[in-house]
Length: 194
Image (tube, rainbow, N blue to C red):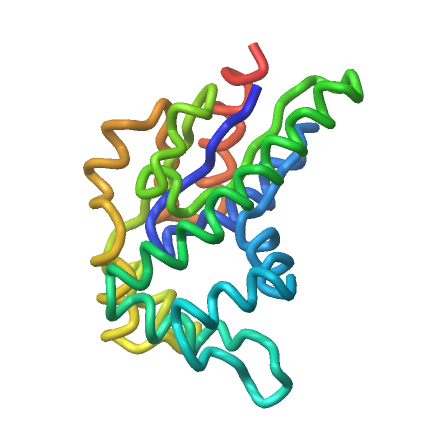
């Protein structure tokens, strides 16, 4: 079973993913896959062709520079995503296949921030959405060093939370305490395992 874990920027998807693995399922982070892909010479070259100067002084892709370009220009963002998204999905499917072949419980939870935006929902057996109060999201992200403008640009590039909730099978509200988030995860994971 392949479960997509999604939510908007700053909702707490990574936190939820960290709790989920405790239920004996395999977890995959798209962010980790993207980090790996950005180090690939062919992908780096494709992205430079599309986006221009996105390298740091060591010749590696500067994610902040890249974000500054793609969140201001939706056409360039879509072109860059067309390079990255299929490769991310390939890795997720490969992990899922490996888990099935290993005769484990066969459940993979993949954190995919842009699951709906990339049109990947049809490839999932189930979808969990992580929601969070918008004020709480902004407060958390500003503590991490994002500016109001950066937060707004990223949120504007994503489907609304209401749209995503309608398209999901399970909802985790991550606005309250970590304990409350864990309680909701426990409920959902026991339903999934049934």
